[in-house]
Image (cartoon, rainbow, N blue to C red; front, side):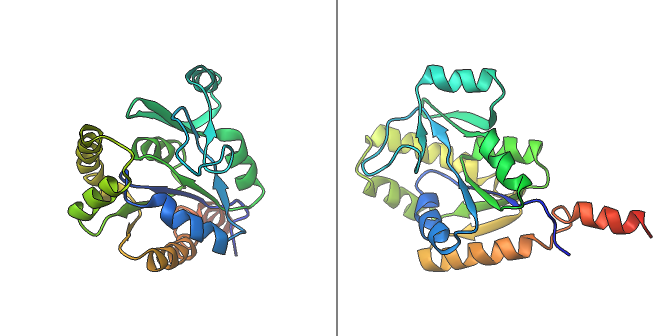
Length: 204
């Protein structure tokens, strides 16, 4: 027996760990899963498309969304807002569709508090040195900014124990395969099956 409501999956991890690198091929291979497009006030990076990678909005627009309780979660990170608009997520879940949120660690904490049935996945680098190499390899930020991101990453990785699953991004193809396995396994977890378990027990 399956839950009629979709599965909410929260994927997070430190900056530079490769969240987007994993999610792109994952979504191509799993078109029945809906990807929740986050909103942000940061400037687009080269190749990013508004409405596909992010909803790029102004600080004023973002703060209006917060004021109107239209954000499932949000956080300030490196001077910019990041967050998840609520409407599309709720609509897809109610329709029985699985939804993946690729969000910052602070935002993931908010979602897990508001949606205890959500399944959380923390992406770890194979080593801290590799994380540093990836951030330097972007060639988009100053050394000072990279050091700031690495300091934040140290704190964020201490929170990995709070997540349901850990995914090590050493090889992208293998990480995508493991994420697919995690989603299947998550559908047998008691917190996802709560309504069904309660229904059976209440009629016992």
